[in-house]
Image (cartoon, rainbow, N blue to C red):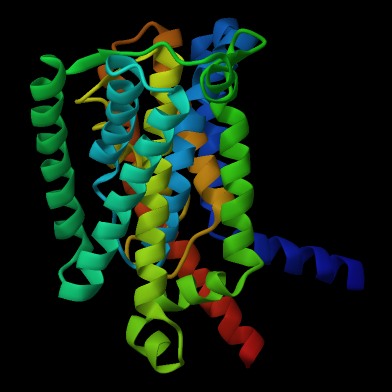
Length: 337
């Protein structure tokens, strides 16, 4: 009897978790494309095709999720990604500086852009949506102008050194990008921050009620700036990795990540209003997005159907996330009673 009660309690608790809806969505989507995509989708090459996309998206989506859990939004990741990649290519490709110099400069620029976003948001109290959207356009225009001024083109090639290529831009077993390993490392770091460090409670508290969090002594401004900074670093990291992998960088690269990262985060169970979400859910959300993005090609259907599926998924995710959050709150209330 006690065992039955415990199993029911655990199942009930699991259903209330943010990642539950994301897990159900991932399973359904995978089965759908496994049926209509056939053996090629299930094969190792098919798996690698969507895992590579999930890894790059996941590296950006995880820090973006922290920003959103804290109640903010970062729409500048697209241009920040391009800025990191183009900076690396211009310095180490066009000017032939050591690859490490280009990589460090690209990451430093992306980190600074994220820091600037956070600083403007906390100092002006403007909505982060407006600030980061403005940054996305401003950085894109700046990189476009500077790149054309310096190189005369919007695409710059680079020949990275062997070490950089091995770590950041090669394929394992000739199919899986090294980005997958870096994604796992980022997931581990973000999980530690969210669940093992004091910052995790601070992030959830700020997303729940920033004013109350400030009154309890939480360094709200410091946390928000740090989260935007981390988001900028992650976006530029993916830009650098793509540049090393493809041995070129383009100014307009990365714009798809602006909304794709938010889709992955929301599908992963994070609320747009903040205060709710999990690392596992975001990982599942990135995988779900990637499966839809790549799976459609294995079906032989028009690629436009992928946008329809993603749109429906996003709407369902928002509805179910609110439902699971209410269940979680009701569960906590019953425990308190």
